[in-house]
Length: 408
Image 1 (cartoon, rainbow, N blue to C red):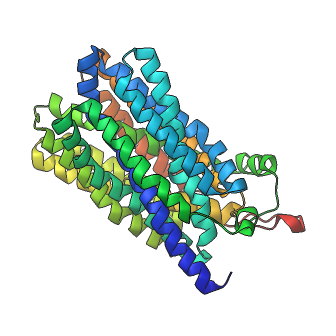
Image 2 (image 1 turned 30 degrees about the vertical axis):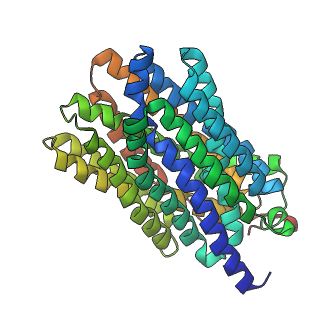
């Protein structure tokens, strides 16, 4: 493949994976809007719906390494197709199932698998293989910006669908959008056969996994990503309800806040990708986590108003998914590309364990204590922990002794 062909391929890959990420992440970020109408319609507490979202996030993480393994071995195209159908099944399940246990388990499995096959981990490998080394961090930043654009685009769309056609039919409409827009994009995700099989150390899956799990820097990334998941999903799922509890009952404020998070993270993800190619990624990651704690602290201390919500959303949005291009960039730089989707999936599993705990704990403590104050405090403290954990990460490529195990 010539450099010119590779450049053209990179643009195609970024466009097609960008559409997939826009839809998969955009739809998922709006699930918080269904918490109150579904809970009221079925007579559930908030904990029931929160547990369903928590299980979705946990299984998204659990399926992630396996989806990444398949994408590394047989290509991203097949994984995304399977994920799109699973995602549609999950949306239809959430629209029709009223028994709490079935709702929680079914939506968890279908949506979790759908996200594992259509979000960051599954597509990181094809992006890394298409991008030259000097553009890799930038390319990951572009993909992060695409997912953030999805949040910005889909927040008002989902709220309007619920308001105009009802929460149940809104799920039907989104399932149709996934089918009509996501699946056709996979036609452009065909990789050259050698691109899937090469581009990194000649290791087996087990060898790559053992090497990563024994690496201190990898485990520090895992710890930081746990915090990232806790923070993001707690805020995304519970912010609308939190604002309503505090007297800001106009739905448009929550919609605008979540849309602003997506809008500003377009710039945040792109900026992180750009800076990641010039500065140590570990310092950028630490700065992001420290800054999140500052932003959350100021939001809690300031008098709550429509404008304080918007300022919080813009600030936290700039930091929202800016961790993704930096984390994936470190994984690619340290371990190479051969098993990148799988390793990104392993790190993301930690993210989703944090997501599970964050979204469930928010609902659980609210039901027990009548407020979100304790969870906000935990969220702030975890940001400080993650900032400290990322500082000692070693970004240098691993030096492997065997000739066949040279890092990319």
